[in-house]
Image (cartoon, rainbow, N blue to C red):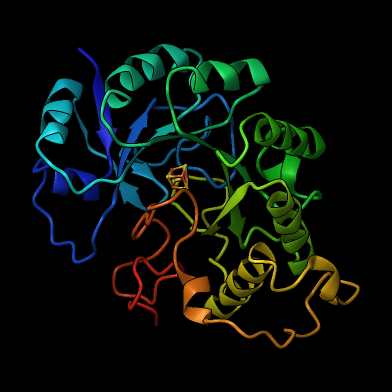
Length: 297
Ligand code: SF4
């Protein structure tokens, strides 16, 4: 009998958990795997992390019988997307195949967030019927990439771009703001990904107890807003990376004049309908990513 972890917000919508949650949830989030073979310094699932097994970032993921989850999913009609977060265990493909067999039978697009090591792995996962793949690049700084995430910056970038050229418009990547990267490093990457039609989902670094970076503070909201605005402007073609000026430490000299609705830039971005509420933020604080229009602070 397979068990699956379900984000606590999703569990509430499915009637598996009682919870006060005041924001709409259009994507159902699932998680498979427990301890990862990789050792990202910021991740609660990393091989050396001693974080609670219930956590991914600051969200709780209780575990349920997969059949029960599927039955409940059949009785709700609010979800526009299903997202499976994969913890890369040695045999993750077996569990992922089994889970996707059921999830891809719903008439709802499915995203899989995973760290693939090869195109062969990528093709196998797309062949299981998913609509989009989310591949976390996470660390924008070439100086810090191998230190915090492990692996090779250039090769990881090339893999995402290759996936994007083989599956155009079906790739999302995750970038974390606040891991010591400069404005220049993260905005250059946004520009590279946008040119390849890779959707960038921005995350704010969130320190989680039991990880190597548990003592690093989250980024100031002001800087996060700046990166949100400029990455949005680059993605929408309002400006190009070459229009921006940086000092010798890669800090943006000034924000160019732009004419667009800032509120849209602050909304959660990523796969369509992904809002991931409270993934990075405490309910009582101003959210880094705004979950719905009209909720901008
Ligand atoms: S952007 Fe959202 S839906 Fe897409 S892979 Fe990432 S978490 Fe999942």
